[in-house]
Length: 113
Length: 115
Image 1 (cartoon, rainbow over the protein chains, first blue to last red):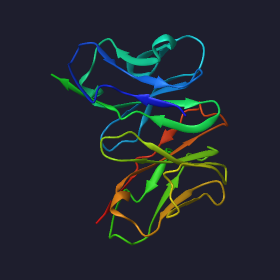
Image 2 (image 1 turned 180 degrees about the horizontal axis):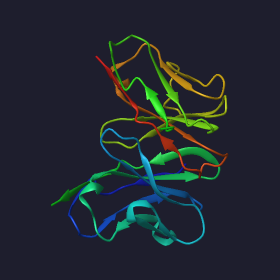
Image 3 (image 1 turned 90 degrees about the horizontal axis):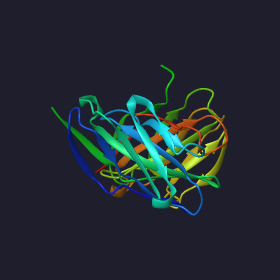
């Protein structure tokens, strides 16, 4: 079965600085990869997803992620962080042969003024 | 707003009691998922429905848990004889289509506290 690891539990960045959140997955073939954001009291919202094609994926709110098969990674990036980006971010991996989407433990993002 | 809704938002119960949660998905969505999320962790898959059929269940779903989606619309998740370890946020999500790559839309969750 597939699995996902988010190595960073908590990251703090200054407003306006760039951001990269790490995600590593384990799966034998090309997985389906997702990034979700969860704000306090809100449901999870999909930022972007990858399942084939161009390995650089653009999402909502100015986020992008790059699928790197050789590194089994799908890191999330944003060139300039806004205070409203403070939230919990989850990487998730799915597979074509099952419906069991596996989430990482999440990375909590704090944005300093 | 026609997003996914869950009721109740919070439930406090005593150990050994039964609880039931309801999820109303986005109306045209044929797939409905249940997840459990504990503090500091990501959501863990519990089960999913394709219309009214429950097609997959996680090992996490012990025999004290049962889920239904009687007419392929709303779903209920019941926990019998609750234990303190059942305290968690229970999330519902829905999606349109047959593939697992389709976007899942999540509800706000039901937070269960078992005393």
